[in-house]
Image (cartoon, rainbow, N blue to C red; front, side, top):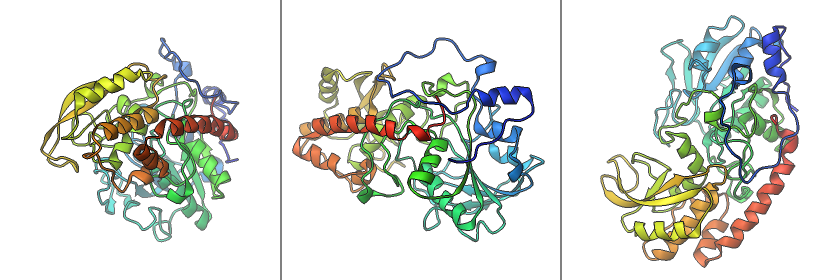
Amino acid sequence: MPRRIKLAAAPALAAVLASCAPGPAPSPRASAPAPTVAPSPATAVVPGIEVFLADVPERLRGKRVGLITNHSATDRARTPDVDLIARHPQLRLVALFAPEHGIRGTAAAGARITDDVDENTGVPVYSLYKSEDNAPSAEMLKDVDALVYDLQEVGSRTWTYVSTMAVSMMAAKRKGIPFVVLDRPNPIGGEIVEGALLDPRFRSFVGMYAIPARHAMTVGELATLFNQREGIGADLVVIPAANWRRAQWQDETGLPWTNPSPNLRSLAALTTYPGTVYFEGTNVTEGRGTDRPFEQIGAPYLNAPEIARIMNARGLPGIRFEATTLTVASTAAKYPSQTIPGVRFIITDRNAYRPVRTSLTLIDEIHRLHPREFQWRGSIDRLAGTDRVRLAIDDGSLAPLLDEWDREASRWMETVRPYLLYR
């Protein structure tokens, strides 16, 4: 298991950290009521960055630190990790590493990120999104004694930051330096697992390891899993968040909201994203270039009222559908500058809602209603982590596949229980 920090001498911090000690986690629930009372100060969730800086592990004090981060990594007062670590007397920030979307999180998906210098600290910023394997190179790490990671997880396997973490752990292993994960809550909770485990034949940067589409883990838990089960073998130090419980969603933690990327602008978008991301692999827009990316889909050929009627008649839990019209920006990859029919997702019970099943069922219905117009794109198998989605929809056998995945997801959660850090 990775090293965890010791309790500090300060009684208040010791109490906070003791409350997040690892323990057995519950099995995934089909549904759960949201808390009706806001957390008290004594039970407020504290992100790993604050826990870390309140009592820096002795073995890391005085080290030259390389920080993999962006705008999504802040303390509860919204102060960025970059500034917090740069001014900490026991740490020396010498390098910053930017993933997809850049160090400030403003770059578009897939945009080329270049090396730079951070204006606030004068620390060099190295782009991980332009390097060959998206990992820090030996040259980038030449002055680094410890590599620290803090990026917001969104709960989906296709989130490239998870792959950034894995390849950066490998880079730290090669150099023989510690890899420190400053943990944060999974914003869509830690109990609902859904979707296929990735087939290794379809491994890519949007899915490196055999985890489900919606995995219900934090980055600290994923790092522990990858390090042991996938054999990375890094000198891993995980700093847990204090007081988080698996049933909690982002808006129940008291932590500030930050858009994790330019096209994920709300918790509702994150809730639908593990499923609506599959529309990227079709000629139906996933909503990029509209006012609600990943919360609505559309195409010029779509009979939106009929699709909404069919989907609502299915009675899928926690969700209803509305026909709408999408105005698409000129910069969008699909249908730029067009006004097209669309379908909007309206979440009615997020604990009952299953985004993967819902979105694939919707794709299946669009395929059925528009067989000549609907088309797959080459990315669909990478996004799904398998070719079985495409093949099942093409031959009309999706329902049994989704049932199989539900059983597989349940078994998987039991398998990874030893790696879970929170109750």
